[in-house]
Image 1 (spheres, rainbow, N blue to C red):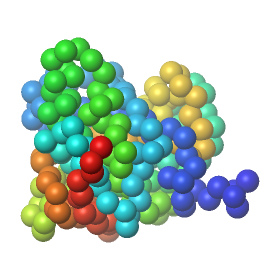
Image 2: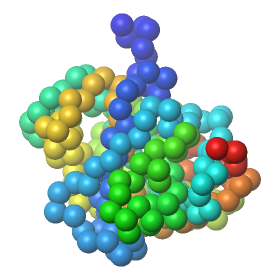
Image 3: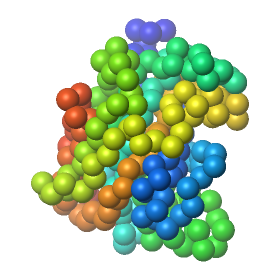
Length: 221
């Protein structure tokens, strides 16, 4: 099974992309949102994956596409109602992801009290870096994340600022939905989210660990 489905290419076969919203207090404030008392969850489809080398696609129905830089946790085995104390045993590794967001669409959804699916779940809305094995990141709560657009630093944050820890998130999510090998959890974005346009180049990284580069393209859909 492992030979057929290598975790190093989880985006080719992993089923679920679970996203945590507002997991950094400074981002909640910049969005003029309340700091949550429990994790805010939403989902992306597996067709949202955009591995490095493919473009970020701007949905035709949005005029305000934003970048959101996030550490992703890659699950190494199936888990249901995982105890927080054992949660890290279920982690295979990590990746850097972008939660690309049609901000104008999201704002409209919020006003109407609708889900965020149109704003968050479009094709290529989850650009992803190479897989980073768990052993290369001894402490995922001690990482520095950064993002540049056309060479200009836009986002910089530390995972130590997360409101909810990775073990807590894994336990919380797995009590709601069964997590499977190859699933990922995006753990939230630090402050500094902002717009991108066609032909922009996004570079992002986990300091000293991994980096990635993407071009933004328009789509007719």
